[in-house]
Structures are given as structure tokens and as C-alpha cells.
Image (cartoon, rainbow, N blue to C red; front, side, top):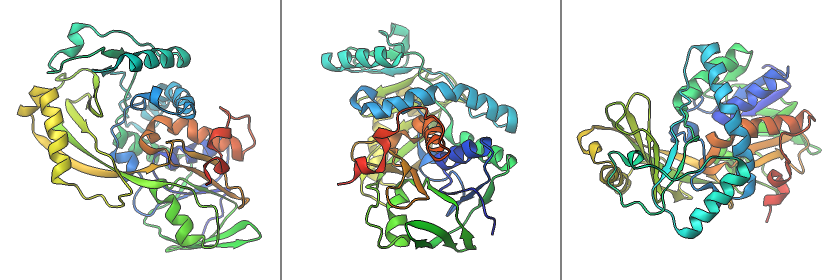
Length: 367
């Protein structure tokens, strides 16, 4: 099997963008994926390019988000030009319907610090919504990405750039000697390793437990299941992303409206449930009554890679010299992906880092 400078395990948005970074830097890259690229958490999310209530999150999350948001317009444009697939980066704006006085203050402070516009919405921003607004806020510059199309475009582009991709590839174990990984054993045979990067999301800890037995420091990443619905509505039924409490609506360009989502911690299956369907359906149709006349065309679940504080691991393993991790982004993988991929490449290639990597280092998370 091919001997590459960089071997990546995990073909979601984090793996594909990390591969893209290394390919653009002139490295040879092999990517291994246990199923097909882009069908796990990256596909299952909504594509809002901002954390929900980012002022409630750690500053390390906002630092990655701010850098990634700057990248997305040019990334989407390049992918469209290079592949013919439009990821539909769309500046929808984000309407938050209800905020406490304290929340409003925090929101304005966060927006000022990170240079996001924030303002009071006008009456027409609530067109079609049945909601009693309380100190509502509008972030007009917030965008979304149509994640399945983003993943399709990324896969096509990195293959054209020379990525060696092996899908339907199960990892069985590694050869580890003197704190260095020498080989990876897979269902497709043995592969020599130079540098290994795990972009394995919710499966990262199980990789350590099953394939790196005896390695003490495994990352504290666990699955957080989320369920969503999509309605087939006429275009312009909803013009803005709407965040109402813990749920949201996301309007696509073709009229489809995503409604989400639930959070179920430490659940490692993707079975959909009647309770989640009722919860999301009732939220969506009460907030936007026009959805009562729109077909609900799909209900699905995905597994987010959660950490205790939502801050991902990005960097080298403290014991294994040629192992690095880019995982644990919880609900914000798409939102943080471009900057996370660039930061990981900066670290491995010894380039000046895009942001300070200290907050994402492995030892920060060890208990």
C-alpha cells in the first residue's frame, strides 16, 4: 500500500479539509474511511456557521469560529469553481427570538469582541413566525453552508489534488514501538506510517481503546446523538435562520427547511425516535405555521463528538511522537473546520499557527 507523508483516519469535513491543507502544502496524503466519506456527523448537521449562543461558549471556540467564518466564502467559491458543485454558502442572517437582559448584554459584548454585527430586528424579520419575541437579536452576517454538498465538493476536489482515498476500510490495530507508530493494519492490508492524524469524531476514543491498547492517554471524546427533520416548503417561506430556545429552523435556497435538534449524550447509535420526531415537528410547525402544509420528507440522526467543554483536541499526542488529533468539535465541526484544519497543519508542518494552539492541546483535557 502507498506510503504517504500524512495518513488521515476519518473522512468527514475535518478529515477532508485537513487533507486539503496538507495537499496544498505539497505533502502526499492517504485518507482512510470506515464507510464512505462525509456520511456521519458532518452530513447530519444543519450547517449554521456559528455556534448556538456563542457567548455561552469557551473563547477557544469563538477563536476558531472567527477564523473559519472568514474562510468560508472563498472556500465555497473555490470548490464551486474547481468541482462544479455549489456548497451554497448563503448569508441568511440569524434571528434569535428570545433573550434575557443578561443574555443580551453578553451577546453585544461577544459581538463587539469578535467583530460581528448585531442589531435589533425589524418587524418584517418575523414574517410568517408565530412567536412572542423577547429582546430579540439579529446577527445579519451569519451564514450557512449546505453540508452534504460541501462534503461532495471537498471529496471531489481533494481527489483531483492527488489524495489517495481508501473507503470501506476498517482499522484493526497499529504497530507501536518506542512511542512511534510504524504501521497501521486494516481490512485492506498493512500501511506504513510517517505521520498519522485522527479526524475520527465520536469514534476517536474507541480507536484508542480498540487499536492502541496500553496507551494511557486516550482523549475524552464521547458521542452526543442529535436528531433533525426537513420540510419541503416553497422557496422564501423563511428568509432567515431562526434560533428559538434550544431549537432552530434553517431555510435552504430551494425552500427546504431544516428543523433541529435534540441532544442525547453517550448514545452510540443513530436510531430515530418518535419522541424526538414529535418534539421537533411540534416546535417547527408552531413557530412557522406554514410548515403544517409542507411535507416532512426526512428524519435522521447523527453522532456529534462531544468533549466536556466543547473545545476540540487539535495537536500532537503527548506520548506518541507521530500521532496527532483533530477531533471533538461537538456541534460546531462545520463551523470550526477550516481553521481547525489549518491549525493542525501549522502544528505538524512547523508553520506559524493561525491562532494560539495552547487551548486545544491534549494535556489540557486530561483528568
